[in-house]
Image (cartoon, rainbow, N blue to C red; front, side, top):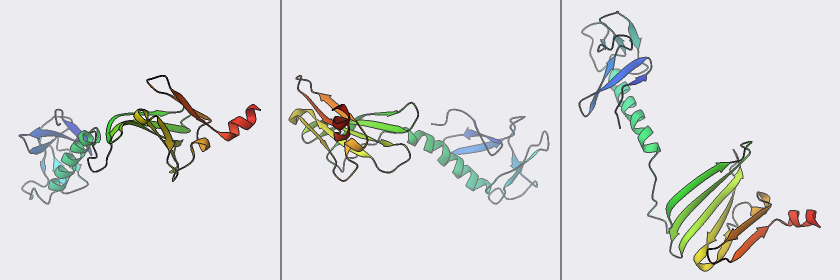
Length: 182
């Protein structure tokens, strides 16, 4: 998780053992010490380099800054962790996100394993808006449905087509599109 030195608030931080980190001068890479000399490490928020006498003001006391940096580094690792929600009936297996070229719309497809077998859930809508549509595709029972508590798919899509493994095809088409074609 922590394999490189990092720079935060103008100070370089290096890992020191398993649990501790140390502040370094970004110019000389010497350890920084509380300023003024002899000041209590726990309440200091000013550090200095003994080589260049440069002073570095931390936004927090040093022990709070260390905790903040450790949490910040950990959050970067946690951000990439895939979460399996074992409380619900469906366990996510694969997720794919796409945005339109102009970033006006988004679509996310999630493949899950549920009680009825594989299920694809498609979320789509306008970027930046809370309203979305949810479409459920369940190949085993040959079902294509949408969540009636969200936007109707016709408010987001003009046509949705699905072809199952056995060649069966089904689609949902917006009534607005049908009227325009006539």
